[in-house]
Image 1: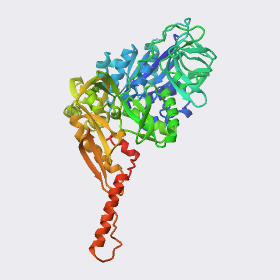
Image 2: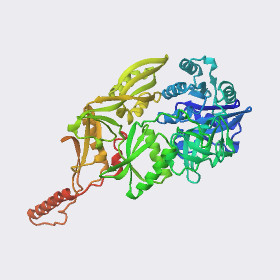
Image 3: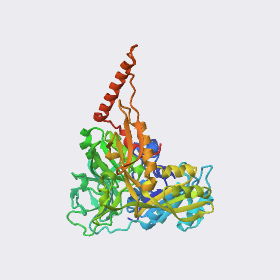
Image 4: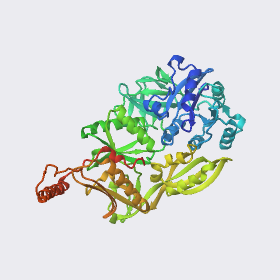
Length: 591
């Protein structure tokens, strides 16, 4: 165990984590040069296309008679649960900071997570070969943040490999070996799990006490399930079979678990015969921030969607779902996410990996409703809201946000915070030119366009991180959307009374663009209770019924026009409006 080092790489999105992992694999000889490719550990097509890490990925390397276990982690705020899971399985973290951009909001958040987990942090400046790099300034920023000397911070270029060997040596020196007792009963932490079409459920584990051999009978402490270690091994970065996973090591177990629900992330694996009594700490239950309805385009695909979600939740522990029905869309599921990027990734994965065609309703947050008989009800969509006469108050989730931005943009940023009903709490300076703005704001208002607006106002230099602070009672109302006089429950939403009129106008204007014209006029209305607050009309398709007339008295023309008028009136009563799938996405983005 003295020769084992377990560590992960943490950084803000796009600061070079995956590139650094690539160089480490190359320098340690784990992957041959001919097999080397950019972003090697990002195995998903989506990760390569978007240039971001979505899933944590472990890999084992050998360096100067030591075994190094690296877990590559995501950098985006929506995947911070993946980061916290990998931190629990290691003893050290490399903090990578871009030498041009400096400290960003997610850098701060990841440092706090690593300090909470009592990890040894090794600070590293990356991209020193860039013309825009300013290592002196960024070194001072990092030194102020974690309390070290600027000259202790390693300067590397992950792209061309400068300084990576020194970093590997520093890892061996500074990160402590794993603590554990080989003589105690087996205890292994499940930090991730995947579903393989051919091998079934595979658990990614960190062995804390004892050791785990191929063929062992195992027990999951929390779920109480018994299973068999059909195959065990390590990652290099593909799965390599071994006879056992020794104490302190990271590896995988192929199990014979039949149900996906039996393999939960955060569970403790122990031996069936000589079982450990106390489980490992595991992970705190994650609470989704954003909810959206996912419905199959064809009702026949409902079982396939259910099966796909089961497999995906095994691979993505922060995803939650429950069945939902809609008058317009039929049977589907309400999914909970950690943010809009998370929603987009899950949608893409369901469509690509499981060949599903989906309709997604407007994303919303969850609300807490206090009723007149003092009950507290959690509401995840506007259609679940109790009758207005029974509601005492509605509370919405608020966030504590942090924006890091050059001080020249401060005025515009504070205006942006005010525009989303936010309250500025604190203003401090990391460096002379770099400000940290702390604020509170309603989560629903920062979900859709806040990040885009922040980037455009700050010319791309601003960065944003947030976490949930609690619920506040506000003057919230339910806005219903009526298409042709009929309420469409999937388009209803909850908003603050002061913002209801503008939002109602915006959604009816957008719907007018996406709902196809019929032979009769369609009214689009936004209403609070019985009061209509916004209206647009989709004009009827015109047909010249008098075109066949070639003369005669004007009464013939009027007779035909009256007949057409009556026909349109009758059609308006019985005609049904087909609402296209894109109509349900109108609130997702401004554009």
